[in-house]
Amino acid sequence: MKLFGKWQNKEKEEQPVRQVPTFDSDGVPAPDAAIGQNRKILVVDDDLVVLKAFQMKLGAQGFKVSTATDGATAVGVAREEGPDLIVLDINFPPDVGSSGMQWDGFNTMQWMQRFRELGEIPVIIITGGDPEEFKSRALAAGAVAFFQKPINHEEFLMAIRRAIGQANTKAKTA
Image 1 (cartoon, one colour):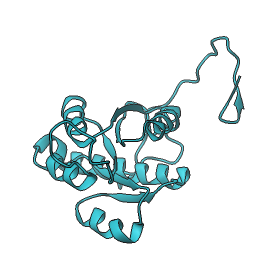
Image 2 (spheres, rainbow, N blue to C red; image 1 turned 180 degrees about the vertical axis):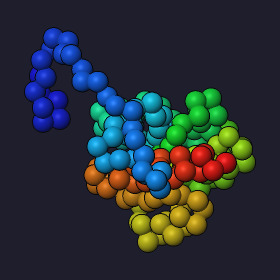
Image 3 (spheres, helix red, strand yellow; image 1 turned 120 degrees about the vertical axis):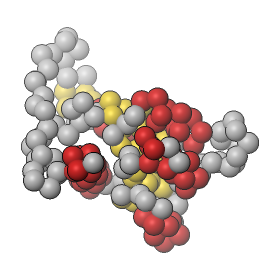
Image 4 (cartoon, helix red, strand yellow; image 1 turned 60 degrees about the vertical axis):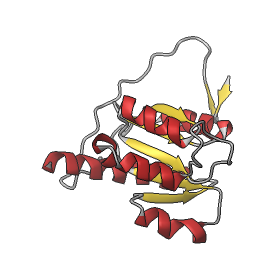
């Protein structure tokens, strides 16, 4: 069966052993390290196709991926699972969410920052909207990176490496 450009046998294949990531003196994962090993990412987007694509792409890198379709659910999942990184869409339709509050990516970030255990988790903002309108606001609100959809996968993985490395450096000094 062909899956993302690679042929895979339907029989169970022996999986290669993944190494635990190594970090340089700045806390950045080594380029050859399996960055997803023992790492959790929460992806928040109202589009189920986007969520599935992130699950497949990040899962292939060894990440455990959790998803949420609205801000209120995202805060709950993040508190329960303690992800290493959050990928957060900005725009959500007015009818998404059950709390009565209009949750967008900025409101979600503000709510997460109210909880000590969530405030230090790096956030990467994604949007299908105009980057001129949102990029500076997202970075000022505390996002570590900003990407417009469709996302360049290689640049996105580099941003994840930097964000996880920065989080490791903060954890070591705390």
